[in-house]
Amino acid sequence: MTDNSNIHDDCDAADCFLPTSRRRFLRDSFLTVAGAMVAIGMPKTAAFAMPLELTEPTRSSGNMHTYAVPAADGATVDKANEVIVVRWQDAVYAFALSCPHQNTALKWEDTGFQCPKHHSRFQANGDYIEGSGRATRAMDRFAVTRDGSGISVNLDKLYQEDSDNALWTAAVIKLK
Image 1 (cartoon, helix red, strand yellow):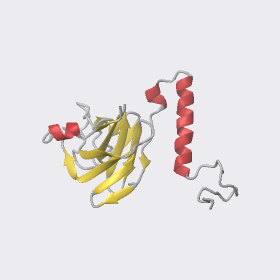
Image 2 (cartoon, rainbow, N blue to C red):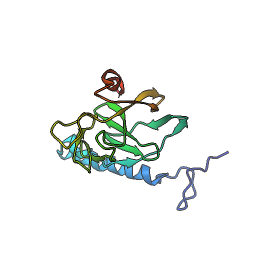
Image 3 (cartoon, rainbow, N blue to C red):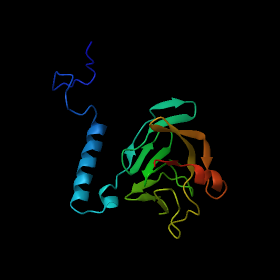
Image 4 (tube, rainbow, N blue to C red):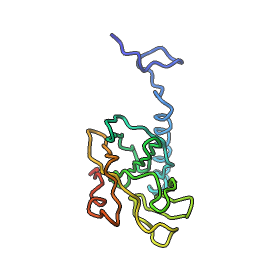
C-alpha cells in the first residue's frame, strides 16, 4: 500500500518534492538564504537572526507540553500556553511570554527580547540587560527536560532568577 499523505494538488506522485507545509517551506527558505549570507561573509549571528515564529506543542498531557527543538538559533512562541522556546548557542530554553516587570508580551529582536511597554531588554538566554527599561530581573524560565528529539516544558514549574536562582540556572537543555 502506498502512503499518499504527501501528495499535493499540483502533483500526483508520492515522491513529490514540494514542501508539505507553508511553515516548513519558509523555514527551509530562510536556512538557505542565511547559509548563503554566511558564505559571502556576513557574520553568522546576523545571518541567522530569526523573527519570532508561532508554534504549537507536538504533544500535551496536563501542564506538560512537548515542543520540537527549533532548527536554528531563534525563538518560537506558543501563544495559547504563553511559552517562548528559544534555541541559542547550543542551548534550549523555555520562557514565560510576558515581561517580568508588568506582564507585557515580549518581542523577539535579532539576538534577544525587548518589552514594548517599558523597553526592558533581555539576552536570548533570558538575562536582563542592566540599565534597560524598568525590569529588575531576568525573564522567567520554565522547567525543561529532554523528550526524544524535542523538549518537554512543565507549565507548573516557573522559576524566577532572583528567588529561584539555582532552579532558574538549571532550566536549560544543552544540545552539545
